Image (cartoon, rainbow, N blue to C red; front, side):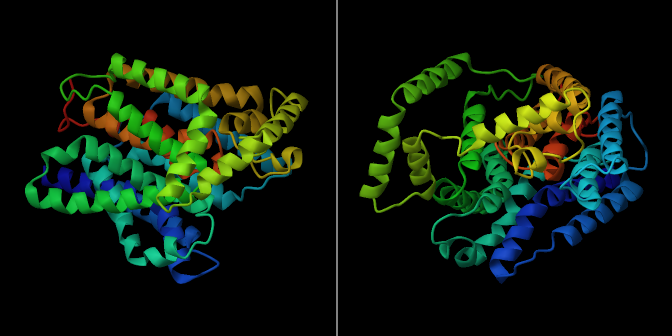
Length: 398
């Protein structure tokens, strides 16, 4: 039992570390004024930690989902064919392995404790507050998309932890964690005021989900408060109907308080130009043209640039279709949706919290930006969908 608990703690640290590598890298770059980070070495260290954890604590191979094997083989075959056919691609083999294959595989071989993972995800990046001047206060205009998405995982973990586990902590731990939560609120304020719009939307959606979810420890599956969902639906209708009023009204309110929000000013500028998508509609149209050129087998991994002029089409669903055609799209998305819907009915309390953090930290953002083949968090989420490793007897499950 002691070995099991120790293995869970170490496995939880390894998973949290791997998910936070982009965060650590961006903090290192910003705090040291360095042009180049240590992304590749950090991922190599993460792979080494994964191997050691498996060898020391998780050598007993549990059942591996057949759906996981189908998806894994599909993306590997597509990548190999891309290389064999010398198809133009913007992703390097090493990064494809580090950011797609490894995070997709980790949940199949490493056991974790949900509470420990969430706590680490929000605590470990909090040291960045010591370099706040380099991270945030020196910015003149925009926080940048890279740092906005890098901070997304700790911020969402804080929201989920604050709604659930925090109330059961002892007094001393609760004080420390409230300080950590405050730091992550500070991060979110800067994302909201100076960051990209996508990460802000992800945070808001995660908060709405946690507010609407019926947090019952002793039942399985995800059950929602329908009255609260109805309230949210009505609020969205009102917001869309009076979008211009809220947009300019919020800007005026911030201005009266002495704040200038780069994100809000950007939205207003695009709104006045009649293009809130910031050119993404044009990119999507170009991507669809590329998809129609080869609708069944696609053009190879990360082939977007020659069709859209961008390394990725700002939507991972379109990227799947463009890169692998309908065949790869169906081989990936059908197992993923089946696993997600099955989990919706059967997940335990702890499992729901893990999936919630990974989902909102990856999937909504991947629908608006980021290259899916270099989005480790997206593949970590997908890996957990197919994993039998994070279902524990020591966690509450009916």
